[in-house]
Length: 238
Image (cartoon, rainbow, N blue to C red):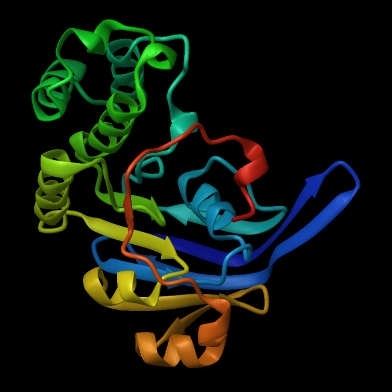
């Protein structure tokens, strides 16, 4: 199981602004490993995640996926704001070829959201949205999970349960964690890559990755998020 990049070029185009992200990038990520991609803020981690999941296409070159890859964990843009949590989950399950009934049951039990699963997503409070978004991705048995900075979310007891769920999924699936935080990669990952000079480079260690990028360009964090907001295309450069 792999996600491979072969001679990938990608430039973001927003009105008159052109931002180069990748130029002739080659990389192969093992889909069953715990892999970290370290990059400074604004260097294109979210763009890379979108290329991995197929949300974006390369301008040139090819991205190939030979494993079932998740949507980015807790990505707000994945849910339709007007649909209920149940309707969103049912749609996602059918897209990826899973029976929605046991997955929805798991999400309702895990989040303790109760009847609010049948409310429009936009009407839920921030705690409920956060619980639903994090749990929904991990509830679907993907072969490779894509994480853009935030591995777990929520507050109090839910956050602790979320951490346990992540550890459980890491026993049976691969993770690709894209982050500006060396500490986060040290905590979870075995393999390390960097985005540097519009290339994706494999490193021997987190220390080597930090030395190449420079600690002053990075932003340490623990990969935990209290609340999630909506994600739109204006955030894609991060």
